[in-house]
Image 1 (cartoon, rainbow, N blue to C red):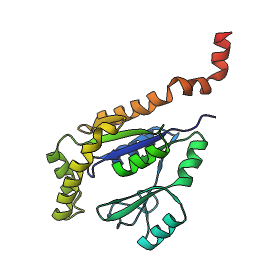
Image 2 (image 1 turned 30 degrees about the vertical axis):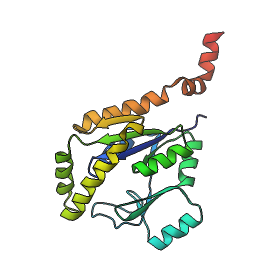
Image 3 (image 1 turned 90 degrees about the vertical axis):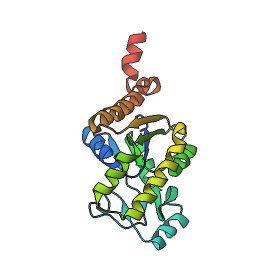
Length: 204
């Protein structure tokens, strides 16, 4: 059995990565998203265990002390962490895993898993990003301004990612992400394992 791929998807808040990931999961049965732990409060539209595991700072620190996390990061004053066990179990079972994490977490994971595929989703403009954040009607203007400032900082690390896509048109961006996943699964080392018997017969 092939080992699954680890896809890291990073984007500024409001760029649309969560909606894109949900659409990817609907299209691909061999793809799961690793649900991160966070200490921030859930938004009205978010569900515990689906969008994030929402925990207290005390519980988060206990989990970190017990070496539960693959990586952790702090963003907008909240802590985020990725479960080692969830990632390892899925990859070992040949399941592709998506991580929705910020650039700090992406670099931490790439240090541990150099073979992980990193993707950065950009907004078409800062104006559109601001509109999307305000349309959510979930954050104060002060928080939105902080998110916009953070987005500019995050995009400074763009060149270190394997792939970049601009979420101007949702369906186009979704197709581009699907193409990345398909291309990674069609690489020679993967196909040699997946179709070992067919290739042996062709070579004889």
